[in-house]
Length: 360
Ligand SMILES: Cc1cc2nc3c(=O)[nH]c(=O)nc-3n(C[C@H](O)[C@H](O)[C@H](O)COP(=O)(O)O)c2cc1C
Image 1: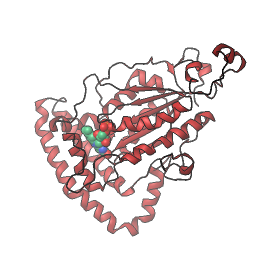
Image 2: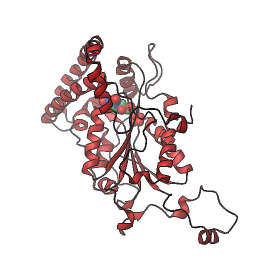
Image 3: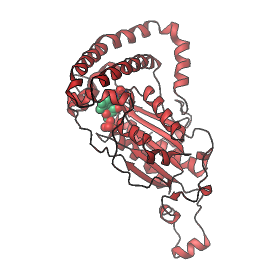
Image 4: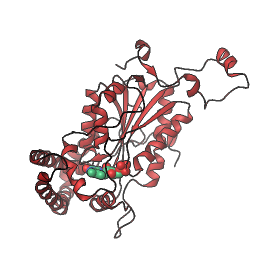
């Protein structure tokens, strides 16, 4: 059950209805008279918390597209940008990049700077925007979900997750689902934005991007990251959410963003991701047994892990994709079942695209 804000007098609203009503049509009367004659439809004005962290700005660009229609509809949106106490570098020096793996996988996140809102602020909906680091949620989002403030902000609230990454987000979303449940939040919808380049090409273009900052076309491969038209199309989710909030749909137990091609899962990648996840779990424990993040004692194990990663990408991944392609007629029904299950709750259907996709 969603906690009813009216049952909790301690909870602080993010702002007054007056402020959140500023984008609604106004009458020529004075504001006080207008309020007395025509009180704002408070049940329809919602308070939305958007939590985000982005290194290149890709994820914040997507979040901005979602927030726009919500604000336009008069809902009050607070964007909380996470600030790690010690910032992560960008572009990543190679050693720091590899050294981040064990803590990402073990969900051992360094702390954040204090949030800009009080933990007891009462929101109607929370949107968590995150990227994937080593098949896990990026450390700033993990830190938020494990923090006392994060847990308090999520408790009893409907939650939408939004991921933007290369193309492997299934394990990370599983961790998000767990962390959200532990905080007492209710995952309602999930949106995934990925790099539509060939999986083998993005194994080169994504590391090139995060290690050098260069995102452009490279050796005939497409630019790294989520395509600009996909980013622009993210506004459809803001439009649909604005309508859902207007109908109080966030109070039901149903997803609000079906029919909008919220996610599309490649079940073949899911199989490779599962194998990667198991390998990362072993390597992360092994490397952490050698020493703390940043310590020289970890370096030999990190070197071995880097060699393993390169060999995997060059040999095992293409072989596994080739085998799955060869056997796909036999695996077809199993893979389809897997796809449908992994695409829950928001799914890949498109029946609402025409209604909400302004970029079409
Ligand atoms: C340390 C690190 C590890 C990453 N691991 C993955 C991964 O396992 N799967 C994936 O799809 N993308 C991965 N990425 C790509 C990110 O998810 C993301 O797309 C990229 O960092 C840009 O995000 P941002 O600029 O919004 O922060 C990784 C990036 C970094 C920096």
